Structure formats: C-alpha cells, structure tokens
Image (cartoon, rainbow over all chains, first blue to last red; front, side, top):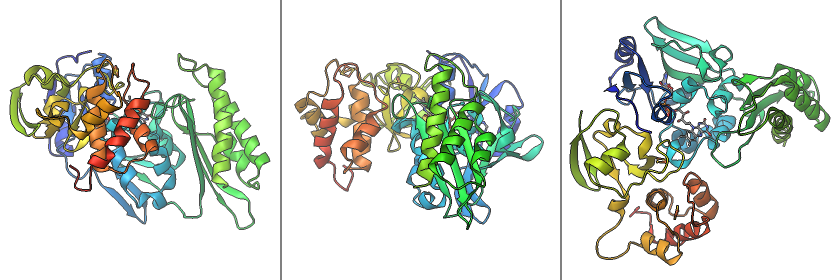
Length: 283
Length: 157
Ligand SMILES: Cc1cc2nc3c(=O)[nH]c(=O)nc-3n(C[C@H](O)[C@H](O)[C@H](O)COP(=O)(O)OP(=O)(O)OC[C@H]3O[C@@H](n4cnc5c(N)ncnc54)[C@H](O)[C@@H]3O)c2cc1C
Ligand code: FES
Ligand code: FES
C-alpha cells in the first residue's frame, strides 16, 4: 500500500502545468482523494505528479448571466457552505451533500471528480443532467466540451493527457424549476449503487417540459435517459406519468453486476429512484 | 525533497521522498505514531489529522503537498497534566476499546466541534460515518462527542 517512486512539481500557472504534462508520463494531482488510493494500489504509477495547489484562479464560484461557474479546484465543502447555491442551484447542492465523507469533502474537487469520471459519482451526474459545459486547457489552447460528449465510459473521458480542466459552467437555473435527486448507497457517504438526478419545467397549461433525467451508478457513465424524458415531456406531472417514466428509465439502463449488487437489483433501483426523484420534484 | 511544516505548534522539517504520505512522514520522520494507518487508501479514517484547520486523511496527502501547512495530530490534542474535556468524555462514555480508531475519532471530533460546537446527533453521526470502529458499535463514541460539546465555545478553543 505504498506508492511507487514519483517526482513532484507544483507549478504556478496552467500553461506551466500543461507543459509539464507533456514531458513524460505525468498526472495532475488536485485533492488526491481518488488518485492517492489508485496509486496506493499501484493501479497507476505515473512518473510525475503535477499539483494544481499553487495555481491561482481555479477555485472560484461565480454566478452571472451565463449561469454558475465552478472552478476546477472548488472543493465539496465550499459548495456545501456557499449559501448562494442553495437557491441558485438547489439540485447541485443536494447532490454534493451525498459525496463521500467529512475528511474527503475537505479536499476533493470538482475538476478531479469530472476527470476521474467514476460511474457512481455525483458531480458528473449533475454535469450530464444540466447540459454543463466543461472548459479544458491543453497544448492546443482552450476547448469547451459539452458534458454529453465528455463522459465516454467508466473512468473514461474525452480529456487528452496534456489537458487540464479549468472550470465547469452550469446553465442558469430558473427559480420555478422542479427537481429531485435520489441515490441509494449502503452507507451514508459511500459511492451510490444507483442514483438519479432529474428536473423539469412546467408550462402555463400545467404540462411538463424540458425534462432532464440523468443516471449514475447504474450505467457505464453519467448520461441522460432520453426515453424516460420523453415519457414526461408534454404530459401532466401525475403519479401515472412518473411511473411510466420510471419504467422507461429502467429499460434504458444496462447496469453492471459486481460484488456490490447484481444488474437486476440496480435496474430495479433505477426505476424506484426515478419515481422518487420525480415525486420529490413535484412536491 | 525538503519540506517544512508546523506540527502541533512546533516548526518541523524533513527530507522526504516525494511518494511519502503525510501519515508516513508524521510517523517515521517525526516519530508521531499516534496517527494510525488502518487501510492506507482512504476508507477507514484512522489516519485523520487536522491540516490548516480542516480534518483530512493523512494517507491521501503527500507530505510534499503539505509543505508550509500547519498540522495538528492527536498528540497535539492532549496535554501531559490532565485529560482534555474531549479525552475525558471519551473515557467517561467508554468510547474506545482497542483504541486503534481513536486518534481518527478524536481529531475528527475536535475539528467538527471547533467549527460547529452546536452539532446535533445527526450531524455527529454524519461526520463520523467516515471513521470505522470495529469494537465499540459507535453509540458510545457519538455520546462522548455530544457530551464534549459544552467545552467548545464560539472562540473555537
Ligand atoms: C472513501 C472514499 C469515498 C468516496 N466517495 C465518493 C462519493 O460518494 N462520490 C464521489 O463523487 N466521490 C467520492 N470519492 C471521491 C472524491 O470525491 C474525490 O475527491 C474526487 O472523485 C476526485 O477529486 P480530487 O480533487 O480528489 O482528484 P484527484 O484524486 O487529485 O485526481 C483524480 C483524477 O483526476 C485528475 N485530475 C484532477 N484534477 C484535474 C483537473 N483539474 N484537470 C484534469 N485532470 C484532473 C487526476 O490526474 C486524477 O486522474 C470518494 C473517495 C474516497 C477515498
Ligand atoms: S489509513 Fe487513511 S483512511 Fe484508512
Ligand atoms: S476502539 Fe477498536 S477500532 Fe475503535
């Protein structure tokens, strides 16, 4: 459980960090809450760790007309304690409450979670659900990647080896939006066996529109469930509509079986949790 | 690489390999073996220390990342003369048996009560959920932490 030998650098700018990433088999370290365990198991043994610690300007939480900008170095604890976010993005706040345990929340970061792309993690689920835009900087300059394109598989993203996530933008959140967030894990703070983040808006005639339902934990990667969304759009948000959407959600996932839970169990969870998330949204 | 940090109020320095965790640095370089290592991959909480006021897992931080930081270990939460209120509360409530998890429980509880002296039982349970104890069944630990709250005021002593 000891790490392999590794070199360490703490550059002071994104450009310097990008240049260092290109020099050898290098990896960024931010909070270290996912990378350190992986290195302890020697599942990764990079030659060089590039610490983002001394780079300024990656840790801001900004609300403006474009939406909510979260810098890559924003920590879970900072989202939890920012009182603006409880109204500016209640779905995000609720989701982040479920991330890991106290000590890990004091160090884990938004950028690290997006780059690590654990299929059961909450931040990528919010990114997928809310059509977020992820800004990355590499030797080719700045790129903006839609969340729908960013996650491609378990622990796999479109990030190039010399690219650094600098921020994520969540589009503006109307105060009238209905939303729900549900996950199931065996112990508070553990990774979810399955989870659902959902929202929809309501037309003046009472019909649901703009439904966004994203799955995590029961899928290779965080993504929207378009079949379930279609069951909701244009319908009155009733218990029957939600039940149909929940059934569609379960039919749309192909969850893994592992020591934590068999696939059938996870699929059943997706149906139950979708139903609950939508019921919460309608409260 | 040479690092300098403040540990329990004392200036300390060490020449460490980059791959050394803060936990191993504390134990092997500084002889502070109060910090326990249960899992070395972030799941048990035994290695919790307080870095710049925040409870963190010292097995998930490189010593070089903590260069320049201020670290409090379980040794820094005791004094030689008498038990601190938190220690006394652990004793009163039988909040330890083998004691392996205790350094992590004490550092976590201290950080929590320093920031949130009015934490209720739900909050205490939520925060301690990341610390594994194989002996006590947790109830006594939660009671000890709740009972120690009165010793932590607004000034965050
Ligand atoms: C016991 C335990 C339980 C946990 N439970 C949960 C949970 O329930 N939900 C959850 O979401 N997470 C959980 N986590 C993970 C935690 O939230 C991590 O903090 C997070 O996934 C990664 O963030 P980090 O800053 O620590 O990243 P690091 O560990 O520093 O890095 C992770 C990966 O991302 C890369 N990286 C980091 N920052 C950037 C960047 N800006 N640009 C490009 N690449 C980057 C690194 O190179 C590395 O590959 C848990 C961790 C532990 C140890
Ligand atoms: S030894 Fe650090 S969390 Fe277990
Ligand atoms: S007292 Fe033995 S592990 Fe907690």
